[in-house]
Image (tube, rainbow, N blue to C red):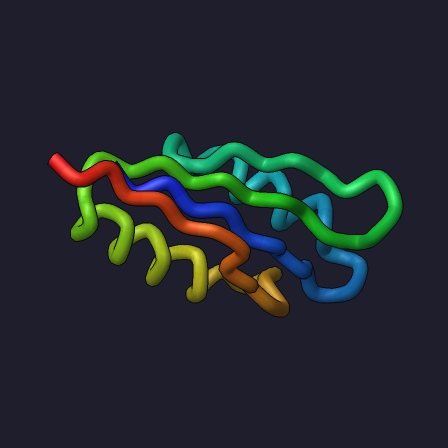
Length: 77
């Protein structure tokens, strides 16, 4: 079960659109920054293949400027 956290930077003036899109993804928890135009994104997927698929979906988002991985944890089973 990979759990990852990212800093997510939206395209200028599109933060609300990006936030709605991310919140619609069941694997994602979105935490808006209170002092910067960015989000903290925590993802939780059942296995590595699902994590790779989610990452590709995230990178393809129209209103995403930058996705920076901050931390990753994988439960070894």
